[in-house]
Length: 348
Image 1 (tube, rainbow, N blue to C red):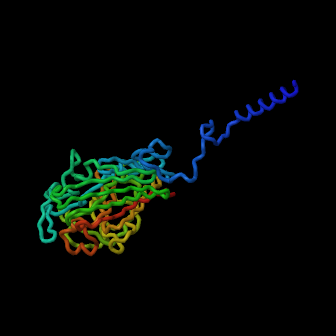
Image 2 (image 1 turned 180 degrees about the vertical axis):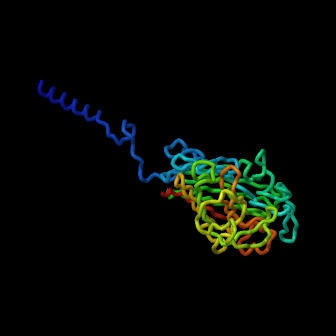
Image 3 (image 1 turned 120 degrees about the horizontal axis):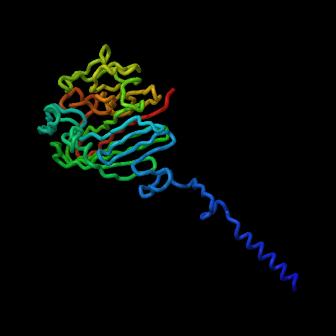
């Protein structure tokens, strides 16, 4: 009897010890649970508390972190390994750049747009606040459609008659950050009347982590540019050779010159191709710019920042010869799409 009791007690003790042993991979254990390989690569917007997902930010192993703001569906700043290399990338529209006297004729009808820049129309007209010159797309709040671990998307409604433009327009901007260091910007729009559509992003490059023109190299993939008279295209297409605009081969950026000029990018109309390369040699950061637009606006601001804005040509609606390079007209109820890529890489 005593032996049987002892035997049962021993079995009970062994079972107790076994029950107290914890599987380190089990839910509720003190050890972390490895993520399942079957988990989706993107996370819903409601899951912002999940590691690797931060509201209004995109980041990955490329070393890039991109910060966004609903005002202007803008890129607040881009950091590369903790250093700010670009900033203030607001969306411009409906029509980027200038339209002479704010006038155009479409389908036999004359239109008068808001004149907000020396008697001309700039960046879609009047915006809000102290930066109203940036236009209505840039200074109004957009609606955030959604965000995943790799994308963020915004939408904006521009009513019929906004700054003189015909038609109700809905514009979407979708940003995607890839592991290769590419920031893709995809524009899509519809309008219920024929109108104008020429959006861009006004991203300011600060590739050396500061606002300085020093130690910057530039290449622009263009043999020609559109000369200006009083900030407006003359309608000519002129060679860059022998001018300050000749950056066909990469060279040091000439900080002594002013730039607010449109280049005619080489390649077939509406095809996605390389527009420019800019390198900050201090930090060793390079950006390659790609787009399906025919033009690239090189803009040198007064405080050491440089823009490479993809676009169709300024005042294109008023120059018939510009049409062979691409149109700024959006047809009623026919979707508009365009894509720009900023590819950031580290160089020696």
